[in-house]
Length: 279
Image (cartoon, rainbow, N blue to C red; front, side, top):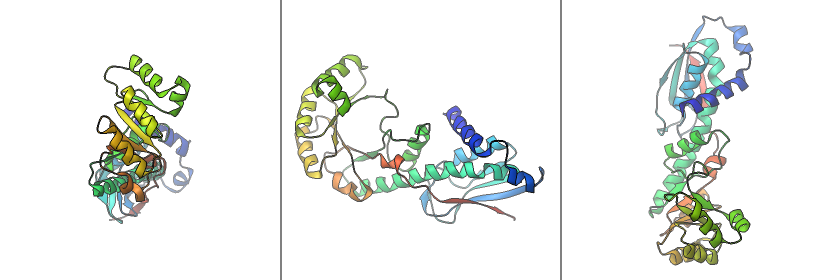
């Protein structure tokens, strides 16, 4: 994980810094020093502080970072989450990249917290989980941010369990055939999940022995009928079109999991700024 994060940081720094920060290098001497705070400019759940600290370390080990919060904390507008001190050129060179990681990961954590709170209010025990709709290369970090916000992770990769979707069923010839082929090949400990679009699909998935049944883009009324049909003989996952405002409509008794791609693909960036100050 550390090596993967360093690789992402180095890629971002190479993109942003290239051959150096010409603005800072033209204004400041190499031995000029400054101190700065990174401030939350809105209420949020903060995430990515250790990554931001690593950005400063990668730019210049002489930069000293003090974290003022920890990942997963609720932070109010105006509070400092990090203080950094050291060579001014290095501090300013690292600024944008550190903020980019913080704003992306904190945005995901904040949205995840809102979904987790909405699910908790429903009081049915349903879990909100993410999907694989993540920024290429950022999946581990973005799924970590989801957890920091109080939600849970679905598959991190295609290798984690079998999930038979519409295209698999079409290419295989039928849902039943796809499940049988998967069961013959997959490791004995891998669960088999099947995406269904109607009650006939649900019945076929049950008969085929699916351990998890995804109800895709079904209405709350259809979900209630499907839950009754499944009758606790499989884990029930809801997917498709669930928004923050409609979580309560889908967090019905008998529903175990609601997957929400928006946690990672549509989370707005959290607002931070870095301010140099003197004591």
